[in-house]
Structure formats: C-alpha cells, structure tokens
Length: 334
Image 1 (cartoon, rainbow, N blue to C red):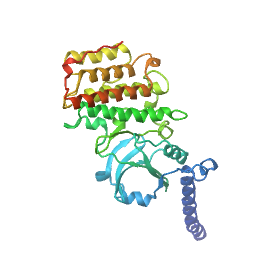
Image 2 (cartoon, one colour):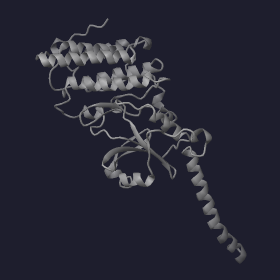
Image 3 (cartoon, helix red, strand yellow):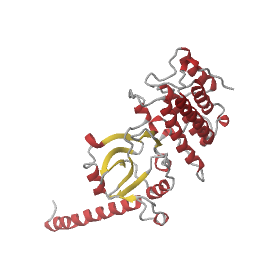
Image 4 (spheres, rainbow, N blue to C red):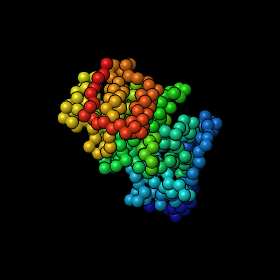
C-alpha cells in the first residue's frame, strides 16, 4: 500500500510530467516545421502567406468534413475555405509530418506559373502542416468529362490541352528540370472559364515517400514519363474514356483503331463540330507522346507548338465557317 508521503510525491510530480510532455511536443512540432534546424532557418517561403491554425479553422468551419471537405489525396484531406472574400483549397497533412516541410514549401513558391495551380500560403504549427492553394471552381478535367456541357467543344478541349502542356513545359524548363510524375486528367483543374492549370506541381518532395505511383512503369526516364502521361491525357480528353496503361505502340494503335472502326473514338458528350485536319493533327501528336521506345517521344515544347497550330486552325476554320466532321478523319502516322 502506498504511504501518504509517496502519494504526495506522485501528486506533486504529475503536473510537472504533464508540462514536460507538452514542452516536448511543442519542440517536436517546431522541428517538424523546420523552425529548429539551421538548414531550414535560412529558407523562408517567399511570396507566400503564413496562416495560423486559427485562421484556417475559421476558414473551414473547424475543418467541417461534411460541408467543406472536397476530396482526399496523397497529401491528405482537401477542404474548401473562405479567407476574406477569397475561396481557397486547403490541403491538410495529418499522417506523415515532414521534417523538411518549410524547405519544400519554399521550393514550391519559386515555381509558380499561370498554368499551374499556385500555392497561396501555408501553416505549420500545433503539429499541423497545411498548404493553401487557389481554388478551381470547375474541378478536374476527369470530373468535367462526366458533365453534359454545351461549352466543352473540341476547340475548348484543345485549349485545355494547350494550357496543361504549357504547365508541364514550365516544369521541364526549370533548372534543374522538374517532373510531375503523377500527371493525369484528375490533376488538371478548371476555373470558371475552363482555363486549365496543372495541380500538385513540385510536390514530389512531400509525396515520394508514400506514393507508390511515383515508381512509374511507363517506360523512359525523367520528362518522357510526363510526356507519356500527357498522351494518355489527350486520349481521355477526346474520348471521355480512361485508356489504361498502353505498353507498346501496337497496343496504342489497336486501342485507337478499334474505337475508330466502331465510331466510338470521340466523346459522345463533345458538342459542336471541327475540321478533320485538326482532329488528325491531334491524334498524331497524341500517338507520338505515347511512342515506344520512350526516347522517340517529343519534348513538351514540340507538343505545345503542335497544339497551338491545331488551335489556331480551329479558330480560322470557325471564322471562315468551315466545320467538317469526324467522318473525314484518317490516321496517317509515319
């Protein structure tokens, strides 16, 4: 049985132990946020807003899962939030706190571009790590393809593809080049006017320890993986169908020709008309992006140039009242 003196010692020590634990948790939180490391202290995110947890709690109604949660990604839960008069998307990491969080956020702040979903700010306190991005009201291309929309015409889809290509080109032109490695229709987001931006750019440092998809079986090294993924994106954009992993030029041609022969190549939800020249050019650059061996795939600057030519062709044809149809389309790939 415990003596009176022993019980007094225990009661006296308990508050001290609790305080010690809280202090330890506080310093662990600071270290995970990079505020206690010499390497991180010299790297402060530029042009970004450092939000407090209280600000983000208010913005998301205390992270209301029912009304504010809009998805779950590799980084964690994604919420919509209202900060001032601006709607934002807030990504909350809650399983894998990163020791180099501020370093990675600083890096992401330096690669902003008009065709990337840009980082607005961050929060790193109370053992939490959150990223605050601009909000894209029309969601992802993958989601929008399922909508019967009168404005998602062939011409508009070319514009979306061109925006996304410019986003990837910006990443590939950085020094050193940056690969997205997770590019797909779900990673291309649309604003109110259906302008497209690539999301999750520059996040490899925060994701590579947990995302097995970064070990990509698609053949090729570095930027050729993104080019291949962009080819799949182009197929899905025009067909409305996920093509899956095509592992040879033969598989690619079989997939396309089968749908061409059954008149199911083009998305039934795609309104309007287009020229056969534009569609043929679109399919040609699509197939070249998917080529094996990977070394034969074009660079993203070539892809951008080709898509710009196709888009301008549609603009001119529209002005001249020329609107042929898909029945004139033939695949002629060298």
